[in-house]
Image (tube, rainbow, N blue to C red; front, side, top):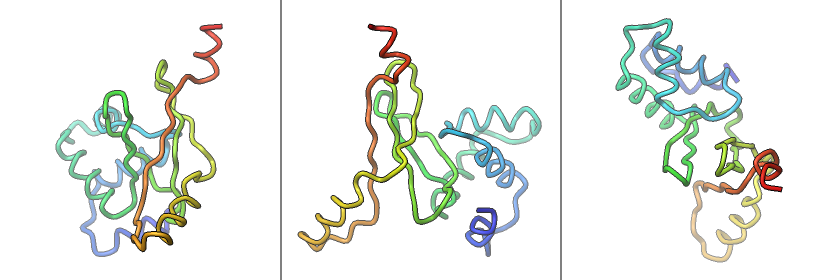
Length: 142
């Protein structure tokens, strides 16, 4: 994965702040908000600003190093490192505790292909999220 990131960063100016953001994202098990990225990095790099983190994230999204996930309830953007350029994640999101559970396989891939074949539309991506209650929250109501 590090080689893929290095390849995508070729020609880009070296940046300690960018490397810190990438390193933090690589350690995350779930998508994280820019505010949280900033707060984590600020603990050991008090010179970084929130606007710098936003610019870095935007650049990493454009380079396909970071993937943006938007949650429905508050339309909040969360970010995660792209683990493999040929795959992407979809999530089940608990509306009670906000836990995000990754869906292993892409349930939209075949539908996307079918629609593209029927319409001739060149589909370049999609988003798919399911909302409900996780097992723990659902058990609290039983």
